[in-house]
Image (cartoon, rainbow, N blue to C red):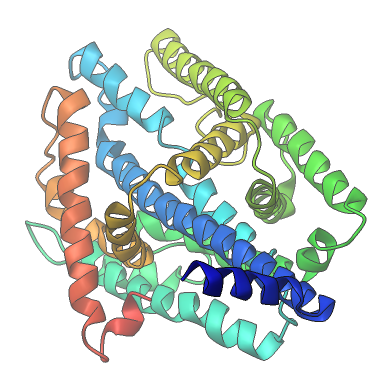
Length: 368
């Protein structure tokens, strides 16, 4: 056995250099594939936590305007959860930037429109009609004029509160064929110039400066760049945590103190998705999930991946389960506990509904 092993090793040493180089390249490709798989998992993890955070924002929505009507501790808890969840929508956009800007395959407009844009746009239209109908239904009566009004305004205004996301997200697809070659250039100078300019503009937005008609396109579009750069470069977690937590504390303090000072709810612009503080918090969450993903066991990874596939479906479906909560004006106390519990319940129900819809070829397209 030993002799055979020695002979075998000797044979390997005498192999041609060409074969050795081929093996080296194969190992390198395998290593890159392994790194890619890790990156894909943390993206899936981000989708799940972002979906939970979005639902939390919508669960706590009514509490924001109950200042003085509920115990102050309950109101402050609701606002604190709100401030700690504002990164959710930006993270969804960052995921898109991480995946689409790093795609090195030749860009095909037809494929991109068919497989990317229409896959989101068609369900968006269908759900907009559904929620326009739901908006006209209350526990007291059915108001079809409300449905008609919302459908009439549909080209420029969402038919239900959570669908506003698509009005600034879908146009961002126009930026992908422009930003992808910039991101993949050998010289990253132009890319970082755009990224730096966006950070400056987001800081300016925090001071109240508006960019007018192009504001959404520019300030939301910057998250594509941020997602790509964090996807390609793993930044030191301690710095991401320091900067992100500092921004979060400043956000919470400003929104709560300004509201108390004015005796009515106001975020003072700090809860906007388009301001520098939210950018820094979103970057922290993105980086934290990158590090955390490496420590998650394979069984948990599989479960997270299964839920992640339904993240868009969960986003589209969840207001159905919040409809009775809002209709009954259900705003119980102990918000530090009830908001997370209701969020979890709605998340689970939305996941189950998305899974159910995905099982039929007649409805699967509604929850891509």
